[in-house]
Length: 118
Image 1 (cartoon, one colour):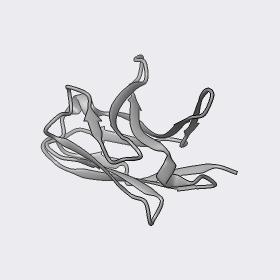
Image 2 (cartoon, rainbow, N blue to C red):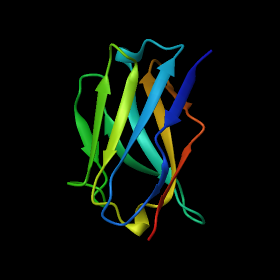
Image 3 (cartoon, one colour):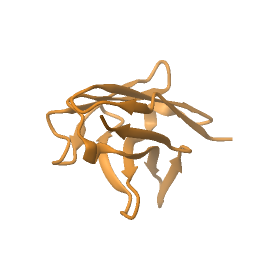
Image 4 (spheres, helix red, strand yellow):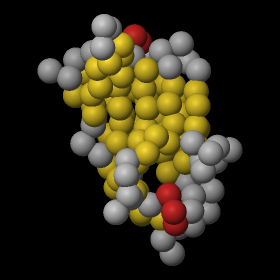
């Protein structure tokens, strides 16, 4: 079955850095667009960064210039490098794999907590 396993979350001070990883199995990774979403308490889940199967990336305005998404198709893994972190980056971060056949198909990881606090 499909599994997306996130790792790398934790507690970091404002201005610090974290790197999230998401290892995918059960899918042909290189065909999927990959994304990182986050959900803070009391808020809706939002797209943070995405990278297409062709390697084109896009970012939410709030993280542009601070976060970098990348992928390693050989390892079936997508990464999110987070720099200059702010308290408002605190959330549960979810990995997403998406592909369109006749309809859109989404797979989700279980989420990893990221807390930015002094």
